[in-house]
Amino acid sequence: MDRLRLGLLLALLLCHAPVWALSFSTVVIDAGHGGKDGGCVHNGLIEKKLCLDLALRLERLLKAKGLKVVMTRRTDTFVDLDDRAAIANRQRNAIFVSIHFNATRDRSVSGMEVFYRSASGKAVASKILRSMDLNLKGRNRGVIYQDLKVLRATRATAVLVEGGYLSNKTDASRCATIAHREEMAKAIVKGILASRS
Ligand code: ZN
Image 1 (spheres, rainbow, N blue to C red):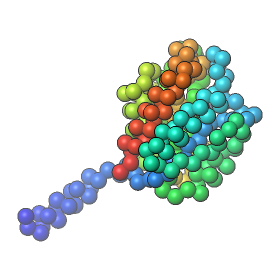
Image 2: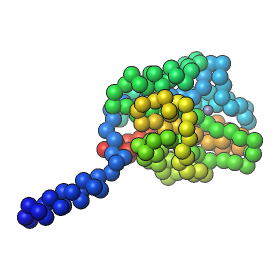
Image 3: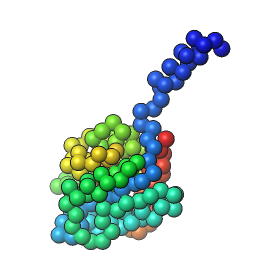
Image 4: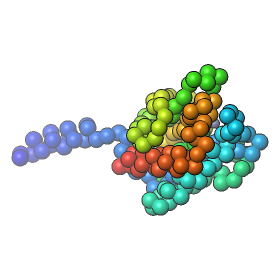
């Protein structure tokens, strides 16, 4: 192959290099709510408890995969959004994954969704939600742009996972079980690993 053709080939490859190929060695796991802030309360479930439970499962699984994990909380304590972002902003080569469960007045609304507010965040959100969709029961509500403060204040690539609607009886009964939360943690970890370059 002559130099011109080689140059053209390289240029073509570079143009098609995926912009979402992220290299990170640390995952900041942000269990939503905590302490005085319970989050949503429906069908006998309190969001803050489910968030922490899922976050601790993620911590264990991610560490087993050799990643460094930083938690914004590990107990039932209140941490405000600026402090959560500040914890994330102290890390290098990190992504930020916030864990929540949703609720709405319309009890028929159900499913999993992942929020993002940057291009790299959208890529990670897509990988996580795809893995959740493949590995878990529940509706896939898609990845959604949200200008949330915790995503805005975090410099690293950031996403926010909504694991299901606690206001929906089917979602709530699934999320109430340890087995489902463990499977959800595994699915989220697969998605995180799939988004690494
Ligand atoms: Zn929440």
